Image 1 (spheres, one colour):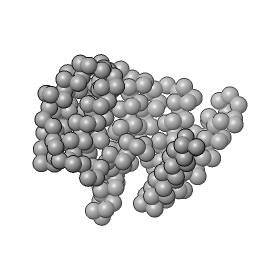
Image 2: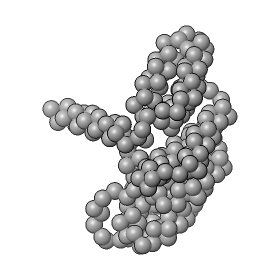
Image 3: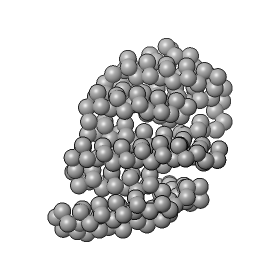
Length: 239
């Protein structure tokens, strides 16, 4: 019974997250329908025909101005990875996704739109780092991580993702340096500093039980009680 309740709670959480995204992200529900059609075409098509047709559908979707382009790019990248496509081609999709943010920034917008786009862009960089960890080299993953924190210096989720990437690459010293830099960036925000330290240290504990725990004694620990997630952290849960 308890397991069933947990599954129901998780389904309800995801449903509410989707409803919130649809309400706050113009064109997302249209993009999701387009992506669903393309992915069904890809999965039902035999050989390369289904993939080619799905690509055409997604390419057409990107030509529409009333759809949320990041949703299209995310689905397209996922499909190409399922198809075992070349990493070079997938990186071009990430490049197109990033260009969309640049164009939106140049076009301006309200403060709320800018904040939403900033969080959305943080999610983009987190996905890009994960991709390079799967398909690239240590150097390419590190390069994307550096670009990510430069592009989103006020997004703690991006800093945390980069530090955890260094841990996955087996470089705890580099991870420590990234985390210390992040703590300096949020020197005036004790809650965010605490969340960052918890996030990265807990991740390190699961990977290297023992040696990474020394980080707890090395870093200053903020004692203020965490009252709300820092801006951008919700992206780690729904991305």
